[in-house]
Image (tube, rainbow, N blue to C red):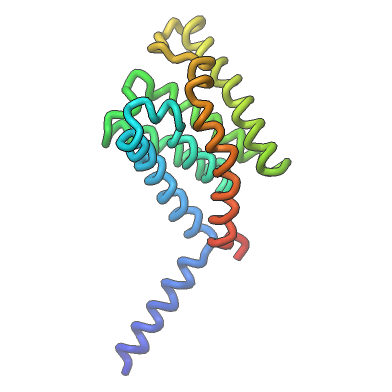
Length: 188
């Protein structure tokens, strides 16, 4: 009988720990980091090597994390997704890795800041627009100030190619984030 009581007490403690807000943030950040690694691979397998640039799957995990958990979580998702994706799959290419990392961190920070002040849709639109502007500034500084190669990275070209991904972000990200946020109840 005491074993059963001890087992129930352990289960109750585990349930209480899993209900903690900090646990939800840590577990959620880890899950979205995994999604940020897996989703691009899935897109590449289903739609070919250009799928990443077209559908922007790594951005999806970062944007959803920003809406649900905020800037710190989304920045961790951005960094871990890019670095571990490279380590595990070789994508993005090493030459593009720093640029992709900077781009995703820009989006993580902007969306988490905007989402605290204005509604989700407007936050997302502002993040996509201002994020591209800031990213263009990063490329300008990399090329013209530091003399670094950009390996053919172009904000305008990435915008044209990435329009389907931007559409997916605008249509799906707010709904997914709202659904998950409601399900995990961060206000507890």
